[in-house]
Image (cartoon, rainbow, N blue to C red; front, side, top):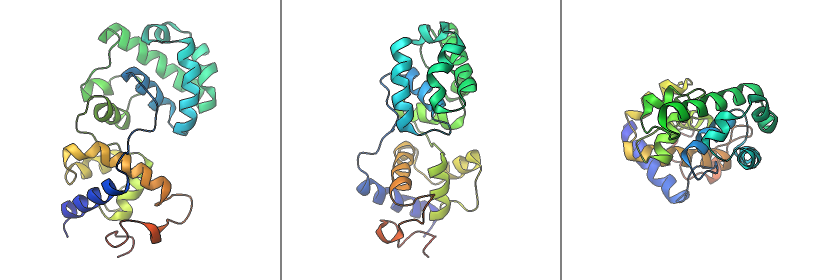
Length: 210
């Protein structure tokens, strides 16, 4: 089985296992997803979803956040960890959205990367979830699982994993595939405990078991 064939089979099985997989960060506007994904670094999505409620209650739009003192943003987002750097990035990002894009989030990958605090993972998430464009989000679950499954070999650097996956994952499948990897990584192919291979829908084709 080639890697493309393996990828296709894995995609189909994960679709059956997690038909409704989507982003676990709550948002109803593109700029809010930008804020949440920055806060999610080294923090759980569940905690971010709670913290941003207070943030948006005080600063309900791009302009309000852009004008907010960094110290006030930091005081609210502190429970997410790395409060100062996250608050600084969020402030600078909202200022750039206000001043350069009239408060809108650009639907161009390279322009997203120019926003403060936005890396490839965040940009891909925005491209896939907000704009419905091809995207591969190489978070920790993705990197761990595709190495175990045999879709990549001994690759840990996010960009290298992303580039390798672009070669074997159909563009239209990338975003949903990565969301399903998150679900699978949390429920079955876990990091902090031994993976539950006995109840894995991929156990007969996973490189870990072959």
